[in-house]
Length: 182
Image (tube, rainbow, N blue to C red):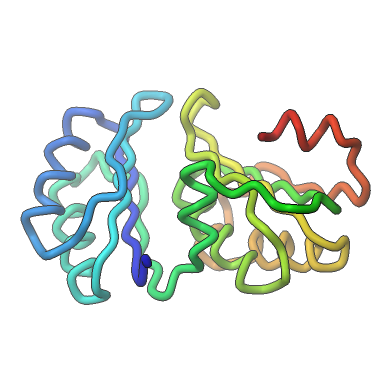
């Protein structure tokens, strides 16, 4: 179970690898992933106790210096966020679909957590910048009103403001749309 997550986004792969090592050496945290993405970015996602994650994110952001694009710490992260980042959350039913697209990968992590905490929805995917030019997006499903509320809360979360590219809610998507998303 993930209690608190830390996420760091850098625009240098070499500096990202070094920063991941510093994060892990700073405090007792567990690496979920550290990987290169597009366009030449590096993403580090880790978990641990709040104080440890805060210490590691501070050390990582400092080590990344001018290469640090963004970072976040989310205490009490919703478990669906991690499953959706790892593409492991396939909902039992498909209702309305909501999509939030951002220029920043970190904004999607914040928005996904805010959305799933705001309404009764299921996260399908949190796509973190690989193969899409460094942008990111969140896909969720549920009843139309819940999806609208979740998307509204996700795009309005303070930490995602200014990074939004677009968002949509599709009330009754065709079955093929869901199949294409999975």
